[in-house]
Length: 389
Image (cartoon, rainbow, N blue to C red; front, top):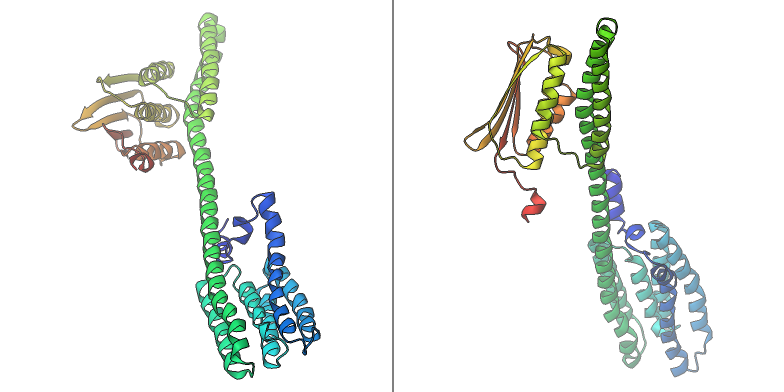
Protein backbone atom coordinates (compact mmCIF):
# COMPACT_ATOMS: atom_id res chain seq x y z
CA UNK A 1 0.00 0.00 0.00
CA UNK A 2 1.44 3.36 -1.02
CA UNK A 3 1.73 6.38 1.26
CA UNK A 4 -0.87 8.21 -0.84
CA UNK A 5 -3.43 5.42 -0.50
CA UNK A 6 -2.75 5.15 3.23
CA UNK A 7 -3.28 8.89 3.68
CA UNK A 8 -6.46 8.74 1.60
CA UNK A 9 -7.85 5.85 3.63
CA UNK A 10 -7.12 7.59 6.93
CA UNK A 11 -8.50 10.92 5.70
CA UNK A 12 -11.81 9.28 4.78
CA UNK A 13 -12.14 8.28 8.40
CA UNK A 14 -11.32 4.63 7.91
CA UNK A 15 -14.95 3.63 7.47
CA UNK A 16 -14.04 0.79 5.15
CA UNK A 17 -11.44 -0.57 7.56
CA UNK A 18 -12.61 0.36 11.03
CA UNK A 19 -16.23 -0.70 10.84
CA UNK A 20 -18.31 -3.76 10.10
CA UNK A 21 -15.86 -6.26 11.54
CA UNK A 22 -18.60 -8.69 12.69
CA UNK A 23 -22.02 -9.69 11.31
CA UNK A 24 -23.75 -7.95 14.21
CA UNK A 25 -21.77 -4.76 13.59
CA UNK A 26 -22.55 -4.86 9.87
CA UNK A 27 -26.26 -5.37 10.62
CA UNK A 28 -26.30 -2.43 13.03
CA UNK A 29 -24.44 -0.29 10.51
CA UNK A 30 -27.19 -1.05 7.98
CA UNK A 31 -30.21 -0.32 10.19
CA UNK A 32 -28.75 2.36 12.47
CA UNK A 33 -29.63 5.42 10.31
CA UNK A 34 -33.24 4.31 10.00
CA UNK A 35 -33.66 3.73 13.75
CA UNK A 36 -33.25 7.48 14.27
CA UNK A 37 -36.29 8.15 12.08
CA UNK A 38 -38.31 7.47 15.20
CA UNK A 39 -37.45 11.03 16.28
CA UNK A 40 -39.79 12.25 13.53
CA UNK A 41 -42.55 11.59 16.05
CA UNK A 42 -41.50 14.94 17.52
CA UNK A 43 -43.33 16.55 14.56
CA UNK A 44 -46.66 15.16 15.83
CA UNK A 45 -46.79 17.66 18.69
CA UNK A 46 -47.76 20.48 16.31
CA UNK A 47 -50.93 18.94 14.79
CA UNK A 48 -51.91 17.45 18.15
CA UNK A 49 -51.59 20.76 20.01
CA UNK A 50 -52.96 22.83 17.12
CA UNK A 51 -55.77 20.75 15.59
CA UNK A 52 -56.85 23.66 13.40
CA UNK A 53 -53.70 23.21 11.23
CA UNK A 54 -54.35 19.54 10.60
CA UNK A 55 -51.91 16.85 9.65
CA UNK A 56 -51.43 17.66 5.97
CA UNK A 57 -48.53 20.18 6.33
CA UNK A 58 -46.65 17.79 8.61
CA UNK A 59 -47.21 14.82 6.31
CA UNK A 60 -46.00 16.87 3.31
CA UNK A 61 -42.83 17.81 5.19
CA UNK A 62 -42.18 14.18 6.09
CA UNK A 63 -42.89 13.06 2.51
CA UNK A 64 -40.25 15.45 1.17
CA UNK A 65 -37.79 14.70 3.98
CA UNK A 66 -37.70 10.91 3.69
CA UNK A 67 -36.30 10.69 0.12
CA UNK A 68 -33.64 13.28 1.02
CA UNK A 69 -32.67 11.34 4.12
CA UNK A 70 -32.56 7.93 2.38
CA UNK A 71 -30.46 9.40 -0.43
CA UNK A 72 -28.11 10.93 2.14
CA UNK A 73 -27.67 7.56 3.86
CA UNK A 74 -26.88 5.87 0.54
CA UNK A 75 -24.42 8.55 -0.58
CA UNK A 76 -22.64 8.54 2.77
CA UNK A 77 -21.97 4.82 2.39
CA UNK A 78 -20.49 5.14 -1.10
CA UNK A 79 -18.47 8.22 -0.14
CA UNK A 80 -20.31 10.54 -2.53
CA UNK A 81 -19.54 13.62 -0.45
CA UNK A 82 -20.82 16.21 -2.91
CA UNK A 83 -24.19 14.45 -3.30
CA UNK A 84 -24.40 13.95 0.47
CA UNK A 85 -23.89 17.68 1.00
CA UNK A 86 -26.77 18.36 -1.40
CA UNK A 87 -29.04 16.00 0.57
CA UNK A 88 -28.04 17.66 3.86
CA UNK A 89 -28.67 21.09 2.36
CA UNK A 90 -32.13 19.96 1.23
CA UNK A 91 -32.97 18.79 4.77
CA UNK A 92 -31.77 22.12 6.20
CA UNK A 93 -33.90 24.04 3.70
CA UNK A 94 -36.87 21.87 4.63
CA UNK A 95 -36.38 22.90 8.26
CA UNK A 96 -36.30 26.57 7.25
CA UNK A 97 -39.44 26.24 5.11
CA UNK A 98 -41.32 24.32 7.80
CA UNK A 99 -40.64 26.96 10.46
CA UNK A 100 -40.70 30.11 8.30
CA UNK A 101 -44.01 29.23 6.68
CA UNK A 102 -45.42 28.00 9.99
CA UNK A 103 -46.10 24.54 8.64
CA UNK A 104 -44.65 22.90 11.74
CA UNK A 105 -42.55 24.69 14.35
CA UNK A 106 -40.89 21.38 15.22
CA UNK A 107 -39.36 21.20 11.73
CA UNK A 108 -36.13 22.16 13.50
CA UNK A 109 -35.76 18.40 13.92
CA UNK A 110 -34.68 18.27 10.25
CA UNK A 111 -31.61 20.32 11.13
CA UNK A 112 -30.55 17.62 13.57
CA UNK A 113 -30.75 14.96 10.85
CA UNK A 114 -28.90 17.23 8.41
CA UNK A 115 -26.09 17.96 10.87
CA UNK A 116 -25.72 14.29 11.78
CA UNK A 117 -25.54 13.21 8.13
CA UNK A 118 -23.16 15.99 7.14
CA UNK A 119 -20.66 15.14 9.88
CA UNK A 120 -20.50 11.38 9.40
CA UNK A 121 -16.76 10.49 9.20
CA UNK A 122 -16.08 14.18 9.65
CA UNK A 123 -13.07 16.32 10.49
CA UNK A 124 -12.82 18.97 13.20
CA UNK A 125 -12.91 21.76 10.63
CA UNK A 126 -16.06 20.51 8.93
CA UNK A 127 -17.71 19.80 12.27
CA UNK A 128 -17.15 23.40 13.32
CA UNK A 129 -18.60 24.70 10.06
CA UNK A 130 -21.71 22.49 10.34
CA UNK A 131 -22.38 23.46 13.95
CA UNK A 132 -21.90 27.14 13.14
CA UNK A 133 -24.31 27.02 10.18
CA UNK A 134 -26.92 25.04 12.11
CA UNK A 135 -26.85 27.41 15.09
CA UNK A 136 -26.99 30.43 12.78
CA UNK A 137 -30.08 28.99 11.04
CA UNK A 138 -31.70 28.25 14.40
CA UNK A 139 -31.01 31.77 15.67
CA UNK A 140 -32.39 33.34 12.52
CA UNK A 141 -35.54 31.25 12.61
CA UNK A 142 -36.04 31.81 16.33
CA UNK A 143 -36.11 35.59 16.00
CA UNK A 144 -37.82 35.70 12.58
CA UNK A 145 -40.78 33.42 13.24
CA UNK A 146 -44.11 34.60 14.57
CA UNK A 147 -44.68 31.50 16.68
CA UNK A 148 -45.45 32.32 20.31
CA UNK A 149 -42.51 31.96 22.68
CA UNK A 150 -44.37 29.19 24.49
CA UNK A 151 -44.05 27.12 21.29
CA UNK A 152 -40.65 28.37 20.16
CA UNK A 153 -38.56 27.41 23.16
CA UNK A 154 -39.70 23.75 23.40
CA UNK A 155 -39.29 23.42 19.60
CA UNK A 156 -35.86 25.05 19.28
CA UNK A 157 -34.21 23.84 22.48
CA UNK A 158 -33.80 20.15 21.45
CA UNK A 159 -32.05 21.17 18.21
CA UNK A 160 -29.96 23.76 20.03
CA UNK A 161 -28.73 21.16 22.50
CA UNK A 162 -28.57 18.04 20.35
CA UNK A 163 -26.78 19.40 17.28
CA UNK A 164 -23.49 20.19 19.10
CA UNK A 165 -23.68 16.94 21.06
CA UNK A 166 -24.33 14.82 17.95
CA UNK A 167 -21.63 16.55 15.90
CA UNK A 168 -19.04 16.17 18.66
CA UNK A 169 -19.92 12.48 19.06
CA UNK A 170 -19.63 12.04 15.28
CA UNK A 171 -16.24 13.74 15.36
CA UNK A 172 -15.02 11.50 18.17
CA UNK A 173 -16.27 8.42 16.35
CA UNK A 174 -14.52 9.52 13.16
CA UNK A 175 -11.28 10.12 15.06
CA UNK A 176 -11.57 6.69 16.67
CA UNK A 177 -12.13 5.10 13.26
CA UNK A 178 -9.14 6.94 11.82
CA UNK A 179 -7.02 5.86 14.78
CA UNK A 180 -8.07 2.23 14.30
CA UNK A 181 -7.33 2.54 10.59
CA UNK A 182 -3.84 3.83 11.29
CA UNK A 183 -3.26 0.93 13.70
CA UNK A 184 -4.44 -1.63 11.15
CA UNK A 185 -2.41 -0.08 8.36
CA UNK A 186 0.59 0.09 10.67
CA UNK A 187 0.22 -3.58 11.56
CA UNK A 188 -0.11 -4.49 7.88
CA UNK A 189 3.04 -2.49 7.08
CA UNK A 190 4.95 -4.20 9.90
CA UNK A 191 3.88 -7.60 8.58
CA UNK A 192 4.94 -6.61 5.06
CA UNK A 193 8.35 -5.41 6.22
CA UNK A 194 8.80 -8.53 8.34
CA UNK A 195 8.05 -10.69 5.31
CA UNK A 196 10.60 -8.75 3.25
CA UNK A 197 13.20 -9.08 6.02
CA UNK A 198 12.53 -12.81 6.25
CA UNK A 199 12.93 -13.23 2.48
CA UNK A 200 16.22 -11.33 2.63
CA UNK A 201 17.39 -13.47 5.55
CA UNK A 202 16.61 -16.67 3.68
CA UNK A 203 18.29 -15.29 0.58
CA UNK A 204 21.45 -14.44 2.52
CA UNK A 205 21.45 -17.78 4.32
CA UNK A 206 21.04 -19.75 1.11
CA UNK A 207 23.78 -17.74 -0.56
CA UNK A 208 26.14 -18.29 2.36
CA UNK A 209 25.35 -22.00 2.48
CA UNK A 210 25.24 -22.87 -1.20
CA UNK A 211 28.03 -20.58 -2.31
CA UNK A 212 30.55 -22.41 -0.16
CA UNK A 213 29.27 -25.97 -0.49
CA UNK A 214 28.71 -25.83 -4.26
CA UNK A 215 32.25 -24.57 -4.69
CA UNK A 216 33.46 -27.47 -2.57
CA UNK A 217 31.37 -29.98 -4.51
CA UNK A 218 32.64 -28.60 -7.82
CA UNK A 219 36.24 -28.76 -6.64
CA UNK A 220 35.98 -32.31 -5.32
CA UNK A 221 34.06 -33.53 -8.36
CA UNK A 222 36.72 -32.14 -10.68
CA UNK A 223 39.42 -33.76 -8.55
CA UNK A 224 37.60 -37.10 -8.60
CA UNK A 225 37.30 -36.90 -12.41
CA UNK A 226 41.06 -36.37 -12.72
CA UNK A 227 41.79 -39.26 -10.36
CA UNK A 228 39.24 -41.66 -11.87
CA UNK A 229 41.80 -43.41 -14.07
CA UNK A 230 45.01 -42.96 -12.09
CA UNK A 231 43.72 -43.46 -8.52
CA UNK A 232 40.19 -44.92 -8.47
CA UNK A 233 40.28 -45.45 -4.69
CA UNK A 234 41.05 -41.78 -4.03
CA UNK A 235 38.44 -40.75 -6.63
CA UNK A 236 35.81 -42.86 -4.87
CA UNK A 237 36.76 -41.30 -1.55
CA UNK A 238 36.34 -37.80 -2.98
CA UNK A 239 32.90 -38.68 -4.39
CA UNK A 240 31.81 -40.11 -1.04
CA UNK A 241 32.83 -36.83 0.54
CA UNK A 242 30.81 -35.02 -2.11
CA UNK A 243 27.80 -37.13 -1.14
CA UNK A 244 28.32 -36.34 2.55
CA UNK A 245 28.67 -32.62 1.84
CA UNK A 246 25.50 -32.68 -0.28
CA UNK A 247 23.48 -34.37 2.45
CA UNK A 248 24.80 -32.01 5.10
CA UNK A 249 24.03 -29.02 2.89
CA UNK A 250 20.48 -30.23 2.34
CA UNK A 251 19.95 -30.38 6.11
CA UNK A 252 21.42 -26.92 6.54
CA UNK A 253 19.22 -25.48 3.80
CA UNK A 254 16.15 -26.89 5.54
CA UNK A 255 17.28 -25.39 8.84
CA UNK A 256 17.98 -22.04 7.19
CA UNK A 257 14.52 -21.87 5.68
CA UNK A 258 13.02 -22.65 9.09
CA UNK A 259 15.25 -19.99 10.63
CA UNK A 260 16.98 -22.25 13.17
CA UNK A 261 20.45 -22.56 11.62
CA UNK A 262 23.33 -21.94 14.02
CA UNK A 263 26.75 -22.71 12.53
CA UNK A 264 29.49 -23.55 15.00
CA UNK A 265 32.98 -22.10 14.61
CA UNK A 266 34.71 -25.43 15.27
CA UNK A 267 32.63 -27.30 12.68
CA UNK A 268 33.11 -24.51 10.19
CA UNK A 269 36.88 -24.49 10.62
CA UNK A 270 37.02 -28.27 10.16
CA UNK A 271 35.01 -28.09 6.93
CA UNK A 272 37.02 -25.15 5.61
CA UNK A 273 40.30 -26.90 6.32
CA UNK A 274 39.23 -29.92 4.25
CA UNK A 275 37.92 -27.79 1.40
CA UNK A 276 41.06 -25.66 1.15
CA UNK A 277 43.25 -28.77 1.34
CA UNK A 278 41.40 -30.20 -1.66
CA UNK A 279 42.25 -26.99 -3.54
CA UNK A 280 45.92 -27.20 -2.44
CA UNK A 281 45.56 -24.04 -0.35
CA UNK A 282 47.33 -23.95 3.00
CA UNK A 283 45.18 -22.88 5.93
CA UNK A 284 46.34 -21.57 9.29
CA UNK A 285 43.80 -20.66 11.98
CA UNK A 286 44.70 -19.03 15.29
CA UNK A 287 41.81 -19.56 17.67
CA UNK A 288 41.61 -18.10 21.17
CA UNK A 289 39.00 -19.30 23.68
CA UNK A 290 36.17 -16.81 23.24
CA UNK A 291 32.71 -16.78 24.80
CA UNK A 292 30.25 -16.26 21.97
CA UNK A 293 26.50 -15.81 21.93
CA UNK A 294 24.75 -18.11 19.41
CA UNK A 295 24.03 -15.25 17.02
CA UNK A 296 27.67 -14.08 17.23
CA UNK A 297 29.01 -17.56 16.54
CA UNK A 298 26.67 -17.97 13.58
CA UNK A 299 27.66 -14.59 12.10
CA UNK A 300 31.40 -15.27 12.54
CA UNK A 301 31.10 -18.78 11.09
CA UNK A 302 29.30 -17.41 8.04
CA UNK A 303 31.90 -14.67 7.62
CA UNK A 304 34.67 -17.27 7.78
CA UNK A 305 32.84 -19.44 5.27
CA UNK A 306 32.18 -16.59 2.84
CA UNK A 307 35.77 -15.33 3.07
CA UNK A 308 37.33 -18.71 2.30
CA UNK A 309 34.79 -19.42 -0.44
CA UNK A 310 35.87 -16.22 -2.19
CA UNK A 311 39.51 -17.32 -1.82
CA UNK A 312 38.76 -20.55 -3.71
CA UNK A 313 36.72 -18.80 -6.38
CA UNK A 314 38.56 -15.61 -7.12
CA UNK A 315 41.88 -15.07 -5.38
CA UNK A 316 44.36 -17.52 -6.91
CA UNK A 317 45.91 -17.74 -3.43
CA UNK A 318 48.06 -20.55 -2.06
CA UNK A 319 47.73 -19.64 1.61
CA UNK A 320 45.00 -18.39 3.94
CA UNK A 321 45.59 -17.12 7.47
CA UNK A 322 42.74 -16.54 9.91
CA UNK A 323 42.44 -15.68 13.57
CA UNK A 324 39.71 -15.27 16.16
CA UNK A 325 40.86 -13.18 19.12
CA UNK A 326 39.65 -10.62 21.63
CA UNK A 327 40.72 -6.99 21.78
CA UNK A 328 39.57 -5.12 24.90
CA UNK A 329 35.78 -5.24 24.66
CA UNK A 330 35.66 -6.60 21.11
CA UNK A 331 35.78 -9.98 19.38
CA UNK A 332 37.95 -9.82 16.25
CA UNK A 333 37.92 -12.23 13.29
CA UNK A 334 40.52 -11.72 10.54
CA UNK A 335 40.93 -13.58 7.26
CA UNK A 336 43.81 -12.86 4.86
CA UNK A 337 45.14 -14.57 1.74
CA UNK A 338 48.18 -14.10 -0.51
CA UNK A 339 46.18 -13.89 -3.72
CA UNK A 340 46.06 -11.13 -6.30
CA UNK A 341 43.46 -9.05 -4.40
CA UNK A 342 41.18 -6.53 -6.09
CA UNK A 343 37.57 -7.15 -7.06
CA UNK A 344 34.37 -5.69 -5.71
CA UNK A 345 32.19 -6.61 -2.74
CA UNK A 346 29.53 -9.06 -3.89
CA UNK A 347 26.21 -10.13 -2.42
CA UNK A 348 27.81 -12.56 -0.02
CA UNK A 349 30.09 -10.02 1.64
CA UNK A 350 27.29 -7.45 1.64
CA UNK A 351 25.14 -9.98 3.51
CA UNK A 352 27.94 -10.54 6.03
CA UNK A 353 28.25 -6.78 6.53
CA UNK A 354 24.52 -6.54 7.30
CA UNK A 355 24.67 -9.42 9.77
CA UNK A 356 27.64 -7.91 11.58
CA UNK A 357 26.08 -4.44 11.72
CA UNK A 358 22.87 -5.93 13.12
CA UNK A 359 24.95 -7.23 16.05
CA UNK A 360 26.50 -3.81 16.65
CA UNK A 361 29.80 -4.68 14.94
CA UNK A 362 31.86 -3.52 11.96
CA UNK A 363 33.12 -5.20 8.81
CA UNK A 364 36.08 -4.03 6.72
CA UNK A 365 37.84 -5.31 3.59
CA UNK A 366 41.28 -4.56 2.16
CA UNK A 367 42.49 -5.54 -1.32
CA UNK A 368 46.18 -4.64 -1.43
CA UNK A 369 48.55 -7.61 -1.34
CA UNK A 370 45.88 -10.25 -1.30
CA UNK A 371 42.49 -9.75 0.33
CA UNK A 372 41.92 -9.14 4.02
CA UNK A 373 38.63 -9.26 5.91
CA UNK A 374 38.13 -8.03 9.47
CA UNK A 375 35.00 -8.51 11.56
CA UNK A 376 34.68 -6.77 14.92
CA UNK A 377 31.84 -7.59 17.30
CA UNK A 378 31.15 -6.19 20.78
CA UNK A 379 31.51 -8.82 23.48
CA UNK A 380 28.09 -7.86 24.79
CA UNK A 381 25.33 -8.51 22.28
CA UNK A 382 23.10 -5.41 21.94
CA UNK A 383 19.46 -6.05 22.80
CA UNK A 384 16.75 -5.21 20.24
CA UNK A 385 14.77 -2.05 20.98
CA UNK A 386 11.63 -4.08 21.71
CA UNK A 387 13.45 -6.13 24.35
CA UNK A 388 14.76 -3.03 26.15
CA UNK A 389 11.29 -1.54 26.66
